[in-house]
Image 1 (tube, rainbow, N blue to C red):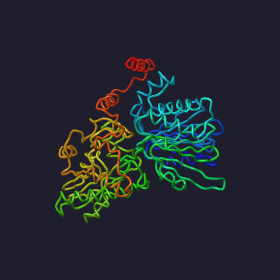
Image 2: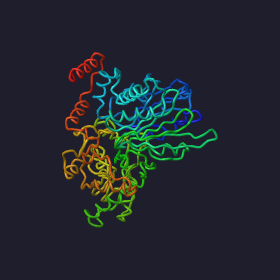
Image 3: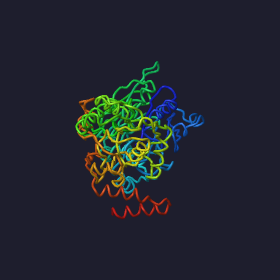
Image 4: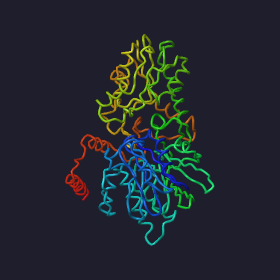
Length: 505
């Protein structure tokens, strides 16, 4: 899970990128990076930490140029090492620097192809470095004896689409030439473009979410379509072309449930409006399952569940109250490593207002239930505050399957709903009752806002992996890799590579 931004401006890009990354900070708190292009040279600074901590005045001054890209990162592939912070750079051909949001499902196969056939060395475990080298190789193949122009770039991106599997939204710079952006043929991860008319000409910004465009004062133009590539040259001229054979739009449903900011619009659907709809559909189900008057009060688990909880309470004509106060300086708990750390973090992150619970039957509404650690702690906090009964409702369906397209849910054993019935999950989180959103209702919540959205990437709910390359063996491998991290020594890394090559031969 990451947030990316690319800027093509007539003024210094560093501050614009910084401001955009602040607006995208919710998409990744592990690391941040900015790279700018001035003349034929790149200037880059990246490190682990929040945007405000990574970039100081001296760092900003060392990032000249009117074109640039940036990224905030939470690692879903590779490690949390500062070496894997993005963007990544390769010097040939031309000099290319790239950041991406998503996850390549055939990264290991591509690494071997890079080593054996393309003669390119991958230095980290990051799939972003793999993607960069695939793009660089394809550009090099297309530009032999020819100059770099949009047509050549679009052919290279078309070849990337043929080789790479998984999800990817990309921004890249080519030294002295311009800004390139493209989206995978399934349109899983979001990407949009905005513009700003100035006396010097049009400026462009490409980012993961529309909130980053609007926060910079740019006008939202449109979403980048699945399989499409956009190139903005150093003169500010924009070119675009469809580069995939059979693109289809399948936006990630979890973006609307949890990941995206509510003030963003993704693929023509307001995130806030879809969450209101989730509350309406969840209210219909609760009305069917619970007698009138059985619930005294509706409370959200701050913050992303608030729109659904408000609409649910309104439709059921039940009092809405804020029972939990959130400490905004604690990271997202479902993204934190280790059950013990997550459990401790919940108590630091939320504090209950006891008077709102005492003697009441409380309906707690959360956006989703992933591992269940947070839910269990919250139910206990409600009981400790005097709640008579605790009913737990999820605005999303049960998360039963790993997500392999860029969200950190990679192992089945960590998912509380995997292999359990709703009744068993209810007992695990110690609630008196549990209500999940239905999968069809979730999808309708989004398509009601934009009827053109008919298909969704919802594999964590329904187990349907739309790229068609995810098998049980694949899931077993990523679970093994997660539970058995690679050794860090240089000899061990070399042994791992030699073993992989031997297996292929």
